[in-house]
Amino acid sequence: MLKQHLLYKLSQKLSPQQIQLMKLIQLPTQAFEQKLKQEIEENPALENGKDESNEFDEFEQNEYDDGLDTDTIDTQDINIDEYLSDDETPSYKTQTNNYSADDDDKSIPYAGGTTFNQHLLSQLGTYRLNEQEKTIAEFLIGSIDESGYIRRDIDDLVDDLAFTQNVFTDKKEVLKLLEKVQQLDPAGVGARDLKECLVIQLKRKKEKPSREIAISILETAFESFAKKHYKKLLQKFDITEDQLKNAIKEIEKLNPKPGGSFAGSNKIAEQIVPDFTIRIVDGQLELSLNARNAPELHVSSTYNNMLKGYKESKTKTKSQKDAVLFIKQKLDAAKWFIDAIKQRQQTLMLTMGSIMEHQKEYFLTGDQRKLKPMILKDIADKISMDVSTVSRVANSKYVATPYGTKLIKEFFSESMKNDQGEDVSTREIKKILETVIANEDKKKPLTDDKLSAVLKEKGYPIARRTIAKYREQLDLPVARLRKKL
Image 1 (cartoon, rainbow, N blue to C red):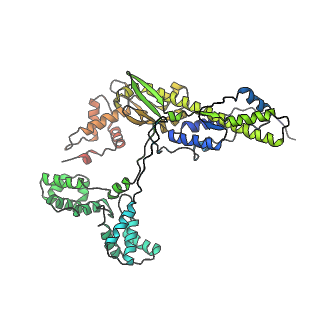
Image 2: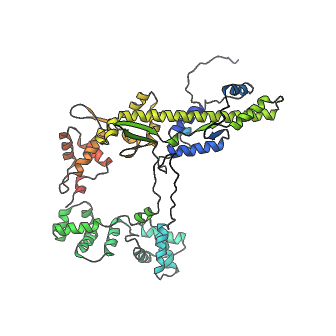
């Protein structure tokens, strides 16, 4: 026999409105505009611009609510992760146009250029090649990556020619045609490694003593050159320090990625739309939200008139009730969306306002050493919101400052204590480390141990391992590779 009993339990649920708000908060400006456009297209009850009629009042809303029996939305089975990782979630590498809503909409035409691959193929016409040689040469060009290198083994290329092009050849013929490909412009294209790339470029230049030495260094002592073992090079080639210095200058003029410059010229530079703007007015900070984040939306007056007609109708058919139910759903969705946008604006301004106040000294001076330690929880506690909400704002939004447009998450950093026991930002320490390395004697660059000692003298007791970690984060090489003659 079945027994019935009551079970009480507490569970957290997110309504569709809350989920919609979370998704809107993490959208940067242009992605938000796309979402807004999509919502207006999908919901005819939502219109852009000022509401001139303003006739849809609370009384009429209650009128049609009372006459309809609609189902409530069950949020028991909502998967939050699924909502936050769907196709509508924006990428952080968004292409945007750097202007606000009140600026003129300007579009810049770009000429359609040839691709790097087409540029190389067009040069093959200068050679007299039979059908097979032409096929092999074109295959080699097709194997060149964007940097200008062929990074595949020759034996693998021979096999691929047989399987994909039905061309049966050998390593000798492929290498012969590779030499022709390496004569194409830009110089260095078709090389199989950096060493070969640099040698090809040097051999295309006019002969002179420093270039001859440079070629010998690359061909016979590339590893010593790469590791900057200058004493070994001086002894091996029996040259003076000035001769070695001139040879290194010749190498430094070369392009390590011959395809990069050509490919880059045909790419449209990505621009960023700042979501906020911080200005200094009479010595005080002034924060504003990009106008494109504050659209004017209203509920369609046409739909309002439809409801009026239904209310005034004496006979109400099933089809009319179905139509009004559809209208109600669209009106609810429109009202939810408008409310979500208002909450989004408030959340963005509240969060960024707190960040600006926390980093006030930096925004007034632009000195990165003035950046205070700040983590997501610091801001979340100040504005009484969840850490995840602050994270959504920080990870995808940009702010225009008097010192350039910055990603908001760049203002967050952990803290370390200086010799006086004060909390300082790790970003401040990295800036000081970068300055010390920039001003060091390049003939005797400072090792990580010495850098640790220098920072200790400046009041920042940091271990050598921490110095190494910060140096790598700043993309700075070890002392030996920073050495110059």
